[in-house]
Length: 302
Image (cartoon, rainbow, N blue to C red; front, side, top):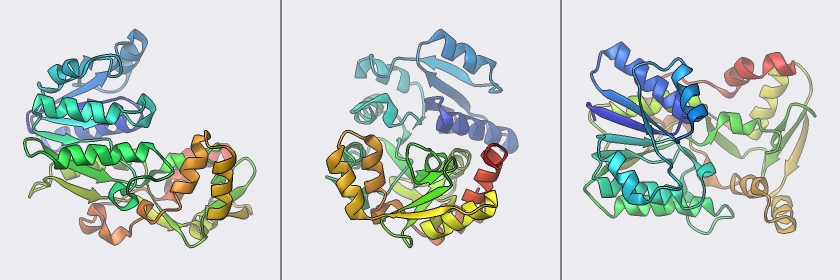
């Protein structure tokens, strides 16, 4: 791992991961290579080269269009592979990438599992892509050549504020609770996902073949609503979306991706206490919902 790390994807999580790796290398003066896997699009490549990322190599590969063997030819060059390309790259891709990693004999793999506790949620949930996350875990647990580490982060904080997700509407000043006002969500922002994953990667004794939990903040929907009123200094209407309401909405429109997400996030597997997390045990500060909203949203919606 000390020699070379490949980060798949340069979206929000991927860029945060690359930044955290670069910072770790600079601060601790570790000697290891960092590379980013980018789709072979000249505009995307040019934009990445013009970014503030320095000392990072570029691999270009069409994850979707290339056969698994082509992926393995790239992965085999690296000791550690971190997948930061999520559900948006298509159904079946997480399994394809994982199979290619195993085919390449990569020393250590961090799959795209930056989300819920998929073991606790189990198979057959209303969100089919979650079953694929279990497939990835089964593949990794069914072998012993490649070491792996899963970082469970809960919901990415920015997702909570998507207007189309509907939990928080800053335009309409409404907070919807999913299931119950006392139900909680674990949320971690992209910046913390990168920072904490890198800290876990280099932690000694090393984590091996296990799930590590992190959290920027774990908060009930009541607290989230309180935070919104405090941050934006105005009242927010509070509306409960019960499980019955969410199930009916899904039955009425089963093709709506957000109907599936709203219902699945009523499951207990989307939340865990801060005291259970790596960052809490090691006194690593994280960005709360309030801090993130103030940094990213307050000037626009105040």
